[in-house]
Structures are given as C-alpha cells and as structure tokens.
Length: 409
Ligand code: HEC
Ligand code: HEC
Ligand code: HEC
Image (tube, rainbow, N blue to C red; front, side, top):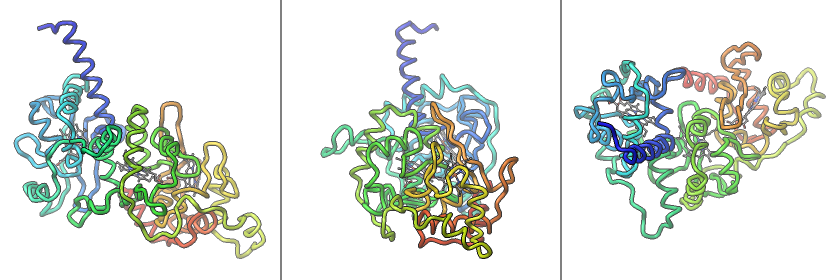
C-alpha cells in the first residue's frame, strides 16, 4: 500500500523527531562498538560485576530488534524488560528512560524501525559473574530503583525548568555518571549530581554548591561547554564527557541547552571536602625560575612537563589558542586526580561541528610522542598539581597503574 503524500510527510516529521530524541538520549554512544556500525551493538561496558555488551538495536529481524513489536520496544527502553521477559541490566539506563513520554517513545520507535540501517551482527555474550548473571535478580533491583511513571511537570515549575529536568534526568541521563551509586549500584538520590566515579574518570559535582559545584560557571560557560566541550578557564570535556558532547549535547537546540542550564541552576547544592572551587587555582610560582636553578636536583616532573607538555600548554601552563591553560582548570584544581591521569593516558579527542580537538595519548606508545611510564605520569601530575593546580593532591605510580588497568577493555 502506498502511503498518501500527507501521511508520508507526517512520517518524515515523526522520524526526524525520533532522530532528535535518540540523539538527546545518546543511544548511539553505547550501542555502537568502537569503529563499528551505528546501533549494531557490541560496545563493552565494564561494571564491578563483569563486562556487559550492548546489543544490536538496528531493525535487522535476525540479529537486531526488527521483530520487536512497539509494545516490546517500549518495555525494553522504559522498563528494562527485553523480548520474552528477559530482564535487562541497568547498564542500559532504563531507569532514566522510564520517564520518556509516550509521544517521544512513538517518535523513537518510528526512527528505529524506518530510518536506521539494519545490520547483521550477532550479540556478544556478557561476562557477568554469579549471582548477577541471574537476570531475574533485577526484579528486586527494579523494585528498589525503578520509578515506572513517565515524566510529569511539577506544578511549581516553569515550562523551561520542566523541559530542562526532562532532558537532564530522562533523555540525557546526566545522573547515570554524575550521581554517586549505592552498594547495589542504584543511584544515591540524596547525593543527586554531586559527583561519581566513571571507570578511570570522575564525573564532577555539577550541583549549585559554591565550592564543590559549578556555581561560578556562568551561563555562557555552561553553554560553551555543552555545545563545544570547552569553557575558557573552567573546563574541557575529555573521556566519557567528550563522547557526550560529540554524540549528543552539541546537536541540541539552543532552547534545549538553555532549559538544561536553567534547570541545573536550581538543583540543591551539595558540599564536598574541598576548600576552594576547583577552577580557582592560579600559578603558584614560576616554574622556569624556580626549577632551572635547581640543576642536579631538578624535579623529574618538571623535566617531563618541559619535554612532553609545555610545547602546547606553555612553560607557565598558561596555554595558547586551542591549548587550554592548566591554571583555572577544573581538572588540575580538582581534589581528585583521576581526570588528570586519565587525560594523560588517553589524550583528548572530540569532534564538534566546526572543530576537531586533539591531545595525544601518552599511555600507549605512539608514533610521535613518548610513552610515559606510571612513575613518569605520577611525577608530571605531581608537578602540575603543585605548580598550576591543587597542591594538596599528590599521587604515586600505583595510583596511575590502577587507572591504566581501568582503561583497558
Ligand atoms: C549507557 C549505555 C546505554 C545507552 C545510552 C542506551 N543503551 Fe540500550 N542497552 C545497553 C546495554 C548494555 C544493553 C544490554 C543489556 C543487557 O544485556 O541486559 C541494552 C539493551 C537495549 C535493548 C534491548 C535489546 C535486545 O537485544 O533485546 C533495547 C531495545 C535498547 N537497549 C534500546 C536503546 C535505545 C532506544 C536507547 C536510546 C534511547 C538506548 N538503548 C540507550 C546500553 C545502553
Ligand atoms: C558517560 C558519563 C557522563 C554523562 C552521561 C554526563 N557526564 Fe558530564 N562529565 C563526565 C565526566 C567524566 C566529566 C569530566 C570530564 C573532563 O574533565 O574531561 C564530566 C564533566 C562535566 C562538566 C564539567 C565539570 C567540571 O568541573 O569540569 C559538566 C558541566 C557536565 N559534565 C555536565 C553534564 C551534563 C549537563 C550532562 C547531561 C547532559 C552530563 N554531564 C552527562 C561524565 C558524564
Ligand atoms: C599537541 C598539543 C598537546 C600536548 C603535547 C599536550 N596537550 Fe594537554 N591538551 C591539549 C588539547 C588540545 C587539550 C584539549 C583542549 C580542549 O578540550 O578544549 C588538552 C587538554 C589537557 C588537559 C585538560 C583535560 C580535561 O579533561 O579537561 C590537561 C590536564 C592536559 N591537557 C595536560 C597535559 C599534560 C600533562 C601533557 C603532557 C604529558 C599534555 N597535556 C600534552 C593539547 C596538548
């Protein structure tokens, strides 16, 4: 049956809307393996209980979700119940997606069934250990953590703040990284958005706390960060956040970015242990003057910095052009050295509409940079922390070795 022209036009609108929802919900990030076909699955997610592989969600009827009915698709995305009643692991963020409205689900379904290219690719088996490999255990977990009601604006909320909350909590699922987890891996909602470990990385506190949070980031800083991954003298998006910007937030409409910012601006502040904001550290002493005179006892960290980093970040860490300053930088001022170490190990790679941002990885050996050992990375980090960043944080080689292991798939 040939659809009438007007039905066809509505379909196109619906599919485009679904594409936007899928982008805002960042389905591609987890459902695409590195270098693999979009949505064909096989992306490894390391969890404390084993490695979980995402599945093929292209409309292939044999290896993908081509045989899913609409109701089955809705149940998988919002309730974590796969075809035939299989309980999905919450590595699939269905507790966030539970709030997606029926309208948006319809559009998402239209997009996945009629616009995504089917790919024949078998799913990889998970390596989850007992008892977590018993999927029915998720019934108890869901009872604790799954709020199965869809999003409803609250009476006291403006439409903009309601939209922002829907984007942050349901579509973008920001809290899956920025909210700490309980021992059972559920969200610790009393510590909403106050910062959490994500593999080797740390997703910082993004509440309105004046010291531990992002109260001093202006609206423009946040807009730049979510659109481009870079906010001058505040922070840069590398690792998992670089992927969020690359795959998702850069494509959001300005109204939606503004709604998220308006919402984030009014979440409750949650304090940490730090004494000053992580973006507030400035140069402690001129490294060229203090270090050159030391000759024999010269700090190893300083020589590594001079050899491997200062050509881009500049001798006094002040940065130049696309190379960020290492003072007034949320990574070097943080009470947690994870993002500093993970950045040195993995580098930075981020693509936005008109920009490719690149810093080489010093973890593996590459063609044109020296591979740095765990001791080298500890030394250069300690030099950076005490000269440009938070001098109360110092690390050793075994700290670096742990981050290196966490980054190995
Ligand atoms: C944070 C990572 C992550 C994101 C983001 C994500 N998924 Fe998933 N998804 C997974 C994982 C992992 C599984 C497999 C879970 C399991 O094996 O229990 C999965 C399973 C599924 C399934 C069940 C497929 C099957 O084979 O039965 C569907 C459908 C699905 N996801 C759709 C989506 C859609 C649509 C989106 C975006 C709205 C999305 N996912 C976003 C990680 C993710
Ligand atoms: C997949 C995990 C993940 C998700 C999802 C995620 N973030 Fe992040 N976020 C991180 C990590 C890790 C960092 C640190 C990145 C760095 O320093 O390079 C970060 C950094 C940030 C920062 C900068 C904070 C600072 O002090 O440097 C902001 C702001 C932020 N995220 C907001 C958000 C918002 C808003 C969302 C939802 C749209 C979101 N994040 C979703 C992991 C995540
Ligand atoms: C070839 C140039 C280059 C070199 C060499 C280089 N960097 Fe970078 N660095 C960059 C770029 C580009 C960025 C990302 C800027 C952005 O995200 O906007 C960056 C970002 C960073 C950040 C912030 C990361 C984040 O997640 O926010 C830190 C910290 C950093 N570099 C430290 C180092 C250290 C330490 C070395 C030496 C071991 C080094 N860099 C060598 C170019 C370089």
